[in-house]
Each structure stands twice: as structure tokens, then as C-alpha cells.
Image (cartoon, one colour):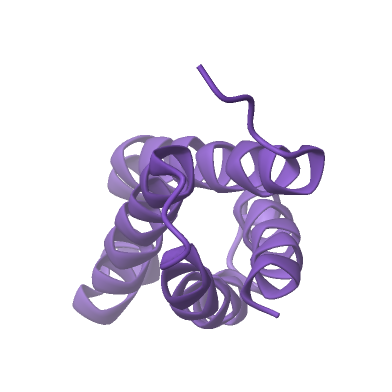
Length: 110
């Protein structure tokens, strides 16, 4: 099996960490907190972010050069999710994971 390049592995790790963070915070913290945390647009962006991160990691793991496209989209969605979560109580981990993932994905998209 061909090993993944170090820079790509860093992006895969960031994507998977962001997937876990966004998904678990949405299903845990947001659902339990209610209010603005379960507003339809917020739920949609968090779900989209989690899924895009998972998909981008998957595409990179296939070794396809098409990962640049998913990474570009992932960076945009992660930035939007971070912006949406910013200022909401208890969402700091999500903001941090999204910003880190966006940074790694921008490198892979270049």
C-alpha cells in the first residue's frame, strides 16, 4: 500500500478531526443547548461541514488528484461554519477545528 504524503496526511487528520468535532458538537452540544444552536441554517451548515470534511478525507485517501477540488470546497465550507459558530456559547472547539481544517485544505487545493 502506498503511504500518504506527510502534507496530505496532515490535511486528512485535520479533516477527520473537524468531522468528529462538528458532528459530535451538533448532535451533543447544539441539540442539548437549543435556541440559536438548533436554528435550521446553523444545523445545515454544521452538517454540511462535517460531511464535506469526511468526504475530503475519503477522496484524499483514494489517492485521486481530484482531491484539490474537494479540498477547495471544504476550506470554503469550514470557513463558513467557523464564522457561523463564532460567538455562540460553547462552540470554540468547533471554530478552532474548522479554521485549522480550512488552513490545511487550502494548502492541498493549491
